[in-house]
Length: 143
Length: 428
Image (cartoon, rainbow over all chains, first blue to last red; front, top):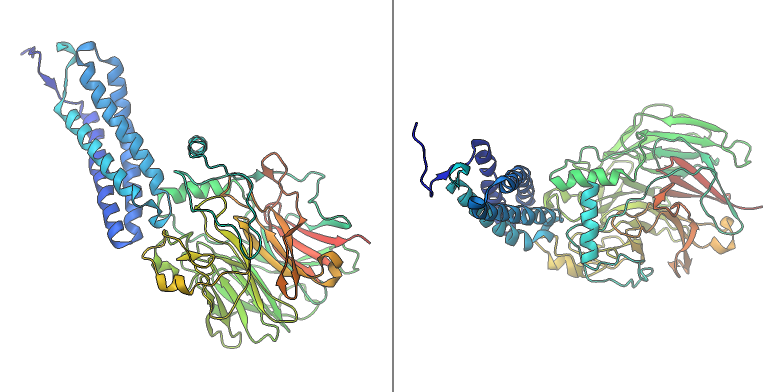
């Protein structure tokens, strides 16, 4: 048995948490691209795609937020800061994503231009959350 | 869902959207505020309530009674020459696909304000043989129809506008049951059928029929392609089934009628939602041949609606203004010209059935109004003729749809929430 005891060692996410975190970025990015396509073409189906992609990102992303919250509550002082940043970014992504879903519930071109702005911000937040998350967290044992 | 509504209420409070009583929005020059919509549309759905021993409110000197109850979603009525009343019962729009998450949620919310009874898809005939005001005989005139709505009788032919086709029955006076299955006159636009009701009336000489066809969306959110042959009134030759657009840009022309004397076609039209509690006024208008009334590109003349893209400045420039605003979101679904037999105060004008709003914090409509006319044109504010459907606790006991005037001096009102036919007469 090799004990990993280096202070700076990072433990990867639990596989299920990693799967949950894998959803928001591609779905919100897909929504952004669909929004841009709608803005350029006026073809309503792109706006419908966006609505569903956002709904999917919120649904699965909601569980990732929940996981991060539980992790935050349970983490000790040594790893709390990084977990807190991860949680806050993920929560901001979800709240703005939900706002974006409401914007997308407007009819036809009424979603513009807010839809594109919000989709872009939410995509960036999903990217940041994924970056932090997949970089891993200090394991509890070493904290 | 209620949680979302609560969030919405909070969002509305934050956006300082007062949702108060409607401003002066009647007549030829309604006030039109700037379009506005928060993160959620304004929504108040009065839930169904029971009448108990209460009755709708009618003016002093008039009385109201239910002449038929337990119908299966009555929509429009027609008074036949012998005094019998035909009622279309049914529902349509089942084929309209739900394309985005909003459509699922909106469908659930709007269903809170509807009857749980299944549509009859039939015609019921009511008869008062002895003329005492009690319609003692009731029969099913025709069955197995598909979302029947508009009715017209021309000589000995009864026309019924189903949600997908205009059909005809032979009619003999006194008949209580159709003699056979209906014959097709012409198919009507029915793809998607977001607004499925097909209103119907006939020209005074019976040479033409007019069918009102609603848009396939609120404001093109199903795409421009599905709006071909929608939001217009067709003129149809009943002999051949040949048809052509008579007037266009009418978002949802839910009832048509012909003015006695002049022969002019009139319509009530439901305008677009989700740009504020006081936009856009539903209206009553004479339908001028070849005219374009704005939908989807603009409303009330040249007020551009930027939700409809790509825009069409040429069509906007061509748009005409309707004659008479009834108020935003009242959902006018019935129209009928009065006769002197309705009493001197209500002799000259039209009755309008207002189904009532969902897209306002303070409900509008939920009543039948009388719009007075002078010299053949609307003149003056609408007067409540049948009201008191809302019970004051945020619920409603009925929702008026079609209205018909019995020349013997009665207003017939179909109520598709309490599934009742109401009859209003002057007290003797």
